[in-house]
Length: 104
Image 1 (tube, rainbow, N blue to C red):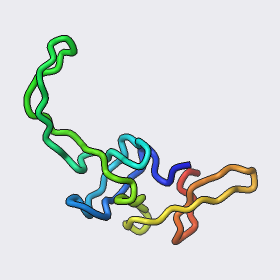
Image 2: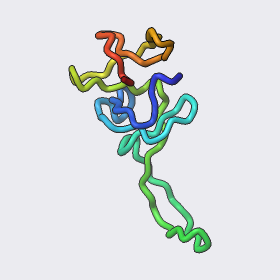
Image 3: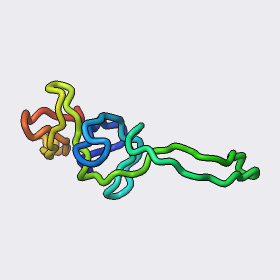
């Protein structure tokens, strides 16, 4: 079970975009792609068969998962994530500081 999943609100804790918040678009191993964070310019060749126009395209680049933290709406900060097994045997993610369940 991953500490950070697709759709989570995260805050960047290291790098050029430090302090910015965004939603996780994709998780790929130990890297995450966050919406409107770590924008790069990619020089793309046109491909008429795939209907892709050429030029300079701006898109999100992956960030290492250690450089983002799950954002806690309650206190407005990034929080560490732990795991807890409920009475019914289900494993849920919890904020370490408050013990509050993330996935209800």
